Image (cartoon, rainbow, N blue to C red):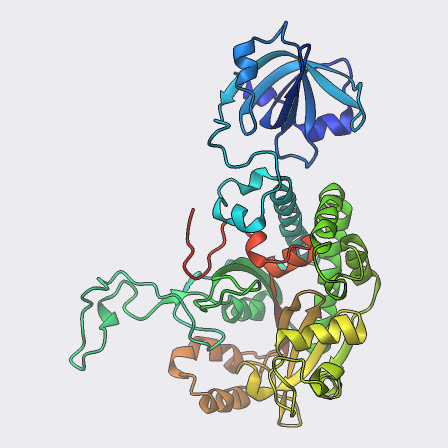
Length: 483
């Protein structure tokens, strides 16, 4: 069949090989016919653009053309000629068409009409065949590649941290358990507790919520490392911002303080967006048009002030605003939404945990720029964050983006053993189980820092998609583990 001799549509559009005989393979998006000719719009996923194939019924048998329905997979050989119509510079005059896979038009759910995103989530195994989702996943690929390129070019080392772990880095307790025990009748201790000594790992284990703690171990030897892998959180949340399975990018750097950490995070975000702007232009233009259509149905005050491409360039071209949590609380407490009780969670006093509505107000209404928030109260942040001299705050850092809220969370880590131990005791974190983590503070400790970027939130921002379930191929959410 000579599959390896096929030419991708992307290559044809780039090289425009007029006069050459080539073989295309792909899926039919649309077909229209008249008495003299059939026009088939073919797409192979390499690019958002469909390629027009002209099929002469004198050359291609009628029974073959009848099978060239939307969704069918075809192998087409023919000559590239200059296009007679508008839209593309060339088209393919088919000599032979082979139907590799039929698609019954009565049953194939993706017909050439507008489908809602909710409907497409129900057929997530097919939705990548639409323009919207093929564009999203090409952008996702480009961003993933850019992550590795950025850190590799900076001399960071890629570390694979464990997916199965006995620790809960966030201390939230919302973890998926990993066990080989018979859950209908698990073995019990004399006290009636589940006897995990008889489990595979001879202790409780769960899917990781973060690679950070293990990443710190690597940074204490290799100086600058990053992880990029799946993480899991058993949070029963059905919002547009949460997934049970998601991907995290987590750099950890020895010899970095809080300011170095913020500098790297800002540079990293700008690099990723710049890379997408350079390498995903056609897909981003399409996604911008899709977003503009979607926003026409919204009230005027809920529409974006900037188009998708302008928003991305704006982030790249402007320095992020840097303010402390204390300054942010003052701004929010005195804001109109707070005074008029329009916030769902009113800001009344210092120490409040900021919600997405507060984060977005700071970014979208007050500063109209991305914001780096620093120096949070220690009570609302994790045990490993470095305590500031005031005794009340920690050297934490969150980066807030328009439309998203928090996109990066990080901190300078507490490298001082005595203060770390004291904080762990205050929060009842089992010190004996964390002996390996504490050894990094016992032997050759140094100031170090790191952050986590939720990859799906980054893809959401760059593509303009409103729901995080639409930027991961197979979303895992409460009640949903299909495909």
